[in-house]
Image 1: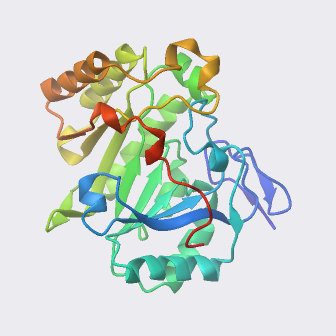
Image 2: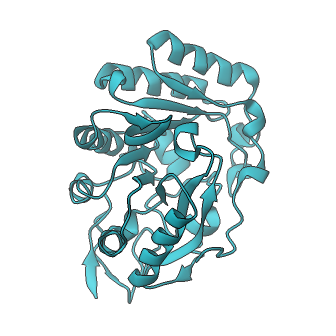
Length: 289
C-alpha cells in the first residue's frame, strides 16, 4: 500500500485499499485490442495496440468512455498479465502499444514495460492533465505522447471537466512532453517518436477552439508537433444537462476552426463530420484482458 501523487490532484490516496480522486484503486483494464481509428500514423494497416485503463483525473461531462473514466469499469489484473497483454498486441502486428488514460497506473506500466520485450513504440494517450514530475519519470519509457489540449479558459475547463487549472496544467505538461520528444520520426508512414496534440471541437464553443489554437501557436513551436483536430464529438454521459453541447457539430463550426488551424500553419490531421457516431466508441467487454 502506498500513497498516490501521480496526477495533478496529488490526493495521497492509500491505494489499493482506497480510491483516489481519479477513481482508481488497483490495476484495472477494460479492453486490449488493435484499434483502427486513431490517427493514420498510429493505426496504419495493423492498428494501434490500445490498452484502455480505468479511472481518470478529470470529470468531463461529455466523456465517451465514461464507463471507465467515471464508473471505474475494468478487470483487475496483475502487472505480469499487463506485460503479457503488451506482448500479445505486439505479436498481433500492432504498430505500437497505445496506453489510453494511463496516468493512475504509471508505476505498474513502467514495471510491465520492464518485463515485456517490446520493439514497437509506446504511446501515452491522455487528457493532457498531467503532473510534470510523473511525466519526467516516463522519459525512458514513452516514445510518442498523444495528449488532449481541451481548453484555454478556466471557466470552460471548470464547466465541462471540473477543474479550472486544466489550461495551466496542460500547458506545463505539453512543454515537458515536447522536451522529451522534440522531433517527429516516421518509418514507412508510421510514427516512431514524437508528439501529437489532440483538440476536440465542442458544439457552441468555436471561439474556445480558436483560442486554443492561438494559444498553442503563440506559446509553442508548432513545427515540433502535429495537431489532430477532432470532429467526433457525440453527446454522451451528462451532456444532455448542457443544452449548448447536447448536439453534434455543424460543418460550419468545424470547418471554421479547421480554416484557422490552416491559417496558423499547423501540420494537422482533420476529421470528417461523419466521425461523430457512437459506433466508433469501443465496446468495453474485457476483450484481450
